[in-house]
Length: 453
Image 1 (cartoon, helix red, strand yellow):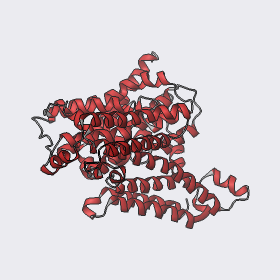
Image 2 (spheres, one colour):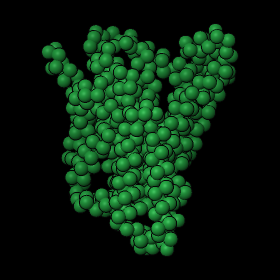
Image 3 (tube, helix red, strand yellow):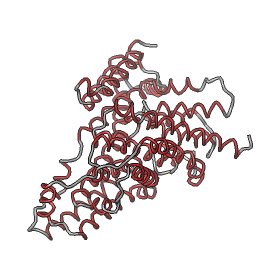
Image 4 (cartoon, one colour):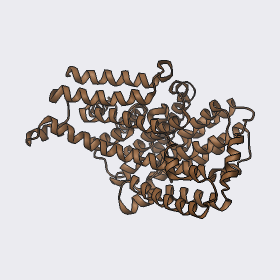
């Protein structure tokens, strides 16, 4: 292998360590991620053709293109995919913040009366699991973390609940064709059908959260302290005089927009961020109308321009950096090399391909699951609804929960709640791994029983 090719791996590991050790190093993870992404692409450009193991590059060079042109074209292509995710994330964050500004979440939080840690844990996790099957896992995590902040006062206690939100959001997205970007990829490409992916992976996905819930039920005792509105917030609410009808209107419209996005994608075949931006535009118009109807109140905090200033831009930049870094590994050929090496496992079918899927799930905790699944789709030509595609959908969807930066839901929750990487590694990762393995074993047992093996 070329020295720069190996150097890219070393730099990626080093950058990943800086992200993980954000608090000891006292360097924001967003800065580390941005530097990592830039350095990796720079190394590829400096290394030239000898660094890249990619058949597409050879075809482009044969066709008369230069290496620089090919690399810049790939960078632009990768940036397009990353921008889709970032704009989607920005739209979802803005809508959730707008609902919060109008007090929409108070309607829901007032209905949750329990302060029992165990009861609340089960309620929150199951609700997240089923919401994520309709919304995508990242949007669900954003909504549920926003709700969590309205209910639980202590930050470290919120982190535990947020950890289970991440597990449940990823598990809920794995069994639905529209719940996760990887299942959407498999569904749109015809690898899985709607009903088959739902009933073949539902039990495994459910088991991946039930087992951690049972474990935590024995560890978590007592009650938690609910969040109380501060004097400033009470004064602000009184000054704004937001009516109950307005709260319900913005809550219903906001959630309606989030629910409409997967429907919009399925009917128009346009990227989800287009639907999200359109929905945000509609909400913007409606809030402007509400502002004109109530000129006597202080509307400054309720305006979209004010809401946009409160969304978590550092988390979006972190997402940009880490996705650029993963894209560099994909373009350079590291991911395809890794995928091909998995194909040489000394096992017979079905154990071989079940093992490959399980390993893909573990890798998705470190590497973005989208290029991993895309690589699997390019390597294998199994027919539609083959067990390999079903198990890949489950594994790639839930394996990312093992590390907090292994999934979009984890990154979103990490940014909103400022969850420490090492804390998650110590407190949640083992639970996520146990749940992931329990779900995988459930799918394998189900497969053997259904096929009489």
